[in-house]
Length: 157
Image 1 (cartoon, helix red, strand yellow):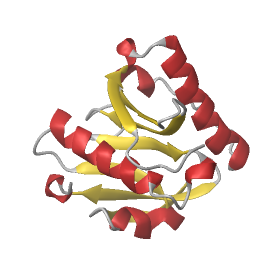
Image 2 (tube, rainbow, N blue to C red):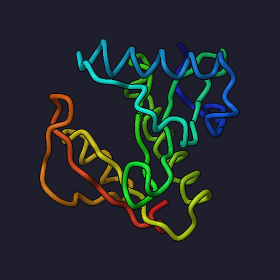
Image 3 (cartoon, rainbow, N blue to C red):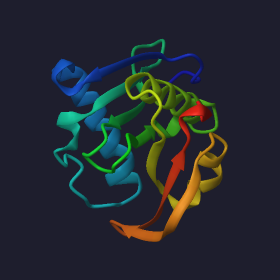
Image 4 (spheres, rainbow, N blue to C red):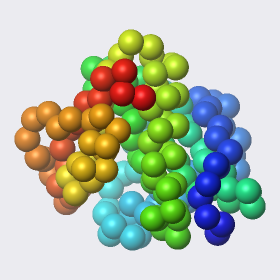
C-alpha cells in the first residue's frame, strides 16, 4: 500500500454503500479488530444500519481507513464515531490523523452544534486527546480491551 496522504473520502449512509464498499469495510474491520487484536466480538452489531460510513481510499484504490458515525440515540445520547481503523501498513504515516479529522468534520456537518462521543481504547487516550477529546467516567472492559468514554466539543474539529 502507498503512504497515506490525502486519501479520497466517501461518507455514505448504510443503504448507499455498494456491496464492494461494504465488503472492503468489513474486511478491514475484521483484519484489525478480530485477527490482529484477537478480539472475538459481534462486529456486525446492527448499528451499521443507522450509521454513516467513512471510506478512505488510497490512490491505488485500496481501502486504507474506515470509521462510522453513529447518530444520537443509537449508541450514546450524543453523535459518536466508532470502528475507527486504519490498515496496519499505514500506521505511523498520518492515516489515523487524517481519519479522525475527516470523521470529526463529517460528524459536525451531520450533527451541527453537538459534542462528539467515542468509546476509545484506553491506550489511545493521548491520540484522541490531540483532537480535543477529554475522558469522561472510568475505564471499562469491552470485549477484553480496556476502554474509556471521551467527549470532544463540536468546536474541536
